[in-house]
Structure formats: C-alpha cells, structure tokens
Length: 119
View 1 (cartoon, rainbow, N blue to C red):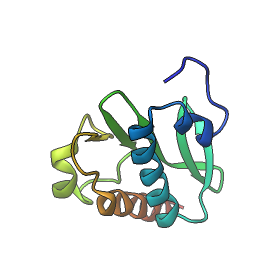
View 2 (cartoon, rainbow, N blue to C red):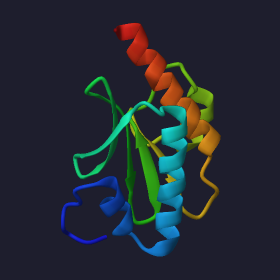
View 3 (cartoon, rainbow, N blue to C red):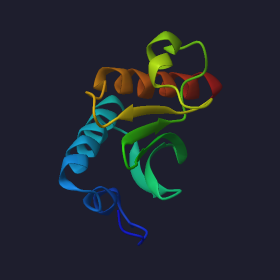
C-alpha cells in the first residue's frame, strides 16, 4: 500500500495489490449488504461505516490479513469469532484462507443491535 492517505474507500482499496483488492472488495460488499444504510467513510486511515454519524464497523487491509473491528458486546458470536480473535475488539482473517463473510455479516448485524440497545 502507498504512504499517501486515501480520501475514499475506493482509493484505499485501489492501493492494494490485485489479489488483496478482491478480498477487500468482497468484505466491503458484505458490510454494505449487512448495513445498507450505513455511510461509508475513511477514519484512522481505514474503511469505516457510520450510522447516525457514529462508527458502526471498521475494516482494514494489512500485509497478510484483513481486520474487522470493533466487535459486538460479549458474548455475542464469541465461539464463532474465537479462532480469529486478535485482542479485545478485533478479528483478523488471513488472506491465505477463505474469509468467513457470513461471520462478518453477523458481526455487523450484532454491532447494529448493540447500538440500537444503547440508543
């Protein structure tokens, strides 16, 4: 990825090599399908989806994996997320294995439910 800060998620994804771009586009499509009314933006140098002006979910591409964060409040999806856990609020999906898009969609929906419960 280049050192220039991307202005859009399109720019962010375009900065990665082709095989990684395909993975990131698929993650993006999964998030959009799970939260179609979320607004796409860049924040902290990575892709961000906001609802009502507040962050819902982020994803970032790295050298060997894609990360999604923050995670839903425990214990939501804990058993399913456990193999991918990296720290308290992050899951990492390595590029050398299939990305579990169904899990990403459930994470987004659970985050949305958390947000709704908190007002």
